[in-house]
Structure formats: structure tokens, C-alpha cells
Amino acid sequence: MFSWKYVADYFPDIISKFPVTLELVLVPFAASFLLGFVIAAARLKKIPVLEQFLTVYVSYVRCTPVITQMFVVYFGLPVFLEKFGIDANGWNPVIFVFAAYSINISAFLSETIRSSILAVPAGQLEAGYAVGMTGFQTMRDIVVPQALKISLPMLGNLFIGLFQATALAYMVNVIDMIGKARNIAVSRGHLLEGYICCAIVFAIISLALELLFGYVNKRLAFGQKDEYGRRQRTEAV
Amino acid sequence: MIQEKYFMICLQAAISKIPRNLLMCFVTLGICVVLGMLAALLRTYRLPVISKLLDVFIALCKAFPANLILLICIMVYTYKFNDFAAFFHLKMSIRDVNLIYIAVIGLTIVSFPGISEVLRSGLIAIPRGQFEAGYAVGMTAFQTFRDIIFPQMFRVVIPPLTNSILSLLKMTALVNVMGVSDILKSATDAATESYAYLEAYTAAALVFWVLGIVIEQISKMLEKYFAKSVKQIA
Image 1 (tube, rainbow over the protein chains, first blue to last red):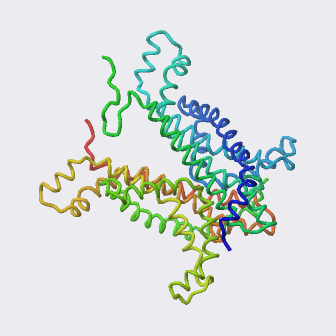
Image 2 (cartoon, each protein chain N blue to C red):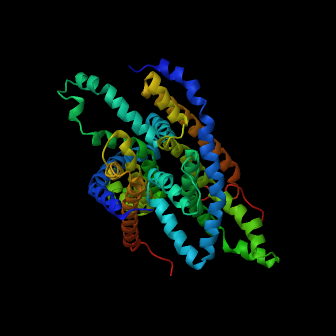
Image 3 (spheres, each protein chain N blue to C red):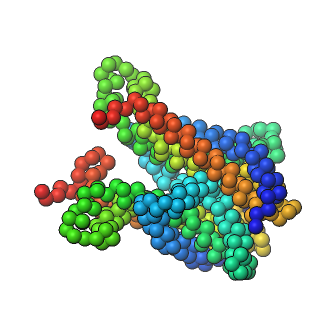
């Protein structure tokens, strides 16, 4: 029967797999940050064929569940790589999860980055040109920093969403916290206790991340209007 | 590469389960909208104790991964249902209950916070003057809400609510961890003999993609329709 004793018993074993979960979050997020910028740039520049392809790509990722995306990559990537003479059958399943989540998050990130760049007033770009900066310099030094500040709340949500989505990785035989809980349950029973243990870890980290992002947002929110339309800090005229 | 024969078999199996996924999605949506609207009203008008409790509850709901909530729901159900039935003197055993109900309960827990937040943001977007105007012409609070606030709120809420519906639809793919046969599960079940899993998952993804696009287009049409009533500058 259910008992909290087992939750406490299993806790050290399960938390020892936390680095795997962390890896599953950080590697795809870093990869898709780069990818997201490239996709957003390509869509903003309206490069002919690439733009249509990326529109379809973003639509696919937005409208299909992560779990199917993960399995399509898990079963599809080896078949795809075989064409180039690469044998991916013995690879660590973590690699497929990295690839699947990078595909997933990069699409959402690119949408976020794109809308934030569009939210920066056009005058900022023109001001950059007016003082003789090149297009790339204006983007790098003026537009993107402001866009990042605008996109921070959405980035925080995406990060927390990705963290929670890693709870699916056990399905492709990655031994993360949930995979560990299932392994323990095979030999010692009490699967529910293992799941609750994982749920507690996930909840604590998610809540901590939410508080952290909330704090950072508050610190960075100067000069923007708050929800009542008042300026939070008056600027010198 | 993808073999067409197996792909078609999986696609057929997946398509046959579309009504079930849509049913789960929209029943959950209905429950969430009703509960979420109540929660949003309570939180916007800051009813002393209850609104604080709701804040905590919603923050907690958001903190758990969706599939863990579903897994825990189904396990608690299998462990506790007989005690529960005995407590209420129900003459039911665990086999009499369709798992879909449990899936809907799980999905409601998962998507309630998001939908409630969306409705709250819609409620905040309506200027205070609208309430006051309603009172000024002698309407009761309920009448004001029903005839003035809600129609305006509905228009504001369409785009974010579409996102919620999409993510809810995608979440219905997770119910196969509970053993409910949905689009994804029936597609993969059709592939067990041939081991054509790539075809199965591609077929399921395709079905979800089409459903998602349809929902997006409907929402765009609704948005356009309701935008008629808003005055445009010039």
C-alpha cells in the first residue's frame, strides 16, 4: 500500500539522476537558442524558399505533440542518417532526445524572438542607421538587446515548459529521474511512490525557476509600462 | 524509408480515433472554462481567503509535468477506487468506469491553470468603466457580466484561448500512458505486428497536425468575425 516511507527511501536514488534531467534541459535550450535566432532571421529577411519551408516547420512543431515529435526523431533519424552512411542504431537515446527537443524548442523560440524583434520600434533601427552603423551592428547592439528584454517572460515560460517536457524522455529508454523510478519499481515495487518522488522534485524546481524569472523580470522591467499603462520609471526628457 | 502500405494502415487506425481525442479535448475545455471563469472572477475581485488559496492551487498545478500528473492520477485511481466506491456505497467495481473519465479529470488538472490565466487576462482587459456603465443604467452585477463584460471578453480571449486549445489537444496524446486508446495509441498498436513504428508515429503526427491547422483556421475566422465590431483608426 502507499506509504511516504518509500518516497523518502527512493529519494536519494532518484535525485542522483537529476543531472540527466538538467542535461536534457540545458543542451537543447542552448542549441535551439542559436537555431531560433537563425530561423527568426531567415523569416524576418523573407529569404524565398527557406521562408516557406520554415513556416511549415514552425506549424508542424506548434501543432503536433512533443511525444510524437520525439518518437519520429527516435525512429526516423537513424533511417535518415543511414542514407549518408552513418550508423546511428547503437547511439545513446539521449542524443535523439536532444535532437527532438532542439527541434521543438527552436521553433517556439524563433516565434518568440521574431515577435520581440518586431515589437522594438522601427525608429530604433533608423536611429542606428542615422549614426552610421551597419545593419548587422544595429541589430547586434541596439535591436536584439531590447528584443531580449521584451522576450524574457516568454523565454522563462519556454524554459520551464522544456524542463517539464523532459519528463517524457523515459519513454525512449533514457534513464532520467522517472526512468530510475520505474527501474526501482521493477525490483522493489511501489511505482506510485517513485512517481510522487519525481513529481516533488519537478514541482520544487519549477516553482524556484518561476520565482527566479519573476524576480529577473521585475528588475529588468524599468522604462516599460506596467499592466495599468503607467510608466514604472519616468525618463528624462 | 517510410513504407506506404504500413503508413496507410496506421493512418486509418489513427483517423478512426479522432472523435475520441476531440471529445476528450472539448469536454476538458468546457469544464476548464467554467471552473476557470469562476476562479478568474474570484481572483480578479480578490475574495479574501479563497483567492489566495486559488493562487496557491494554480501555482502548484502549473509546477507538475503533465504526464506525471496523468500517471499519478491513473495510479491513485487504481489503488483507491474500491475504497472510494465503498465509502459512497456505490455498487461499482474498477472495471465499470471508462478510463476516459479519469483521463478527462487528469487533463482538467493539467490545463486548468493555463485556461484560468487566459480568462483572467481577458477580464482585466475590459476597462472598469464598462462595469460602471452597466450599473449606471440599473443592471445587476450578473446582468452586466452576462450582457456587457462577457461578450467583449470573448473577443479578447480568442487568440490566447486558441493556444490553450492547441496545447490541450496535444496533451490528449499523453493519455496513452493511462491505457486509454487515442490517436497515438491506436496508430502504434496498428504497427506492433509489422514493427513499422516510424510510419505509426508519422501518421499520428500528421493527424494531429491537420487537426491543429483546422482549429487555428477556425480561430482566425472567429477573430475576423468579431473584429467587425471594433472601430478601426481610419
